[in-house]
Length: 313
Image 1 (spheres, rainbow, N blue to C red):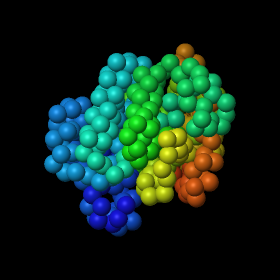
Image 2: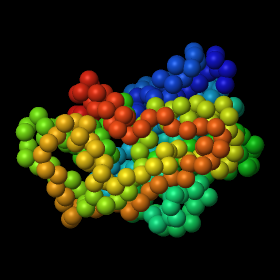
Image 3: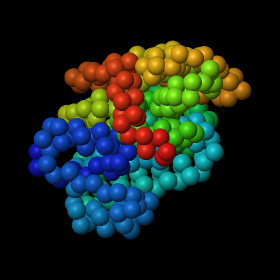
């Protein structure tokens, strides 16, 4: 990409999209195009096509998605599948029809099999059964990356895919029921501290292992790959480090300053037992994460405190 290349970031108001915009601006890119959902409904094929015909972006970061935690996924399987399938297919197809030079598709590590060998290599895609609690979202994301792959194979396009691990950081969603685990814990422990609650109850038994990547580190990788990688195989984005949910809750409580008791509701689902990405491919290309987890949680908590309205999403 040249510094004045026309770059469209789909989903610029979300955590990932906003981080990509910040990183592009930090690196001196000056021609960034964005549209809010009100201005452009990506589920409307006709409107997406009109946008691409009018704006003709040279590069596209497809970070728009309908996202949520375990409860949101379980309660709206059809919505998660339809919304994500429609918006990603519309953007990818319109980029293709309007001769976009390069597109980068953002997926999720939930595309990999529930019991995939750990750490999960990019090559383990479609080698086993998916985790049922987010199957709809995973199937939609698999379809998006496969469509990019098929366009490359059939038409010689240069469309790439990035599969991040669990993300957190500025502009996260702190909704009490629809957020992911780390922002949910930040909100829960903050409210418990403010209310002097004696205990906080967390879902499951705390045993699942998870990996977390600070979103600005992902954005750094996204821009790096747009400039340095082409290929059909997706690229994992993570730290290569993991910890138990129990360890995570204790770390978040420490950062937030909550001193009470942590209890566990074992009637609630744990989700996938382990989900560690093999990040050797990204590292072999010359990239490595920068932000350690405790430092990142401190930054995320400050963002939460500075932007309390985000907690009401």
